[in-house]
Length: 535
Image (cartoon, rainbow, N blue to C red; front, top):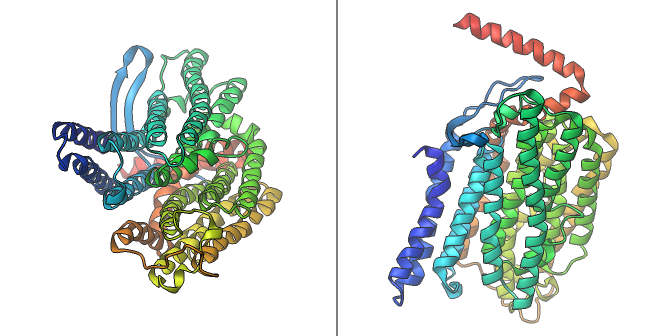
């Protein structure tokens, strides 16, 4: 089996083996521990493979006006020949870091689930099976290089979360059912629109260019559609991706969904799944529909701007800690959208780096909220918290690192990401950048408010101020280690993403800056002649 297929399907295989073993040992204590242990092994193995791919990845050629995006470790097998659908996978600068983020967050979530023995879920064989299928689907969505294959993985990754929320969610059954129904309705409509758009892309490209039908992304990039076709297909894809991110006003499922999800599920859902939508804009929408991206640029920037302002305003008026983190994610994903639709290389690269940064920050925030609620009698209301830092300096220090990263303190990788995003937007739309800067200020308000209210101030009436345990520390330390590594040395991430981020926006940028296209063409010719001479 090709290496990337092993990376994708190993977690699901371990989840399936764990479910079978649990059923075979029904009635024994091992039947409840084996599924979680095998899920942890599968997720850690996937993490090791993803780290290897990050280390091995060699960026393509890039300059000020020209970038090449080359796939590595390619798997390409014809899946359905009559429809031109391929099982094609590949690593490039857009997905290599996101694959690593996915593997890390799932591994940490599995570690958290295995260490919290007092909350072993009912029917653990099904719980961990769904969890591992979700990891395989997310990895597949990031690695897919065929449009229909991407849609298949995109839809598959939602199914496990329906069950994880509805069957093992928190709160009353009616609340879980309401949250699941909202999640289904929003995402199902978006998925159907995306499926229609994907099929239309392959069919119309074939008809307009007189070529055999294909859905391979690299082939479709050379078969640009007419402007009218691009525009309505763009809107269909945008609706699906904005629901997933989520962005205002398509975020209606988020408050109920975030309140109902188990905390380990929420860590990966908020940390990873929202990035699939943003990744889709960079990997699919901008390269395939550059004219539509330019046409709807202002609309997307306004949606991003409203998401930033709305998410920030609601986050620092909420008292529920989960919803503070949830609405802050709406604002942060707005920043990412802002960078993508600046249609500038710096903005796109900043957006990609910020996807990774946000995932590394939001996952420990939700786990810390769980630890705080356990010290506040089960309440997640910040008005019931306070004073924990007096007897838990290590816990407070770990939370402080996460909080400072959330507000993009200079010296953190989040600062680098937001700086690149604002740089790209300043070069594209000055007024949008100035207004968007308010979101940077707002982030400091809700991040510090959550930290100060829970760690300092007066001790809450039911707060048990105690230090973090070793097993809880094992969950937080890998995430905080990754945050500190990128803060101190972001260059490896920037180097690996630069060429692919520039390539993603090159087509749309050429339509807004024609001189860039001429310079890139001359550099491309010079590069080709140089390579020819070297041979």
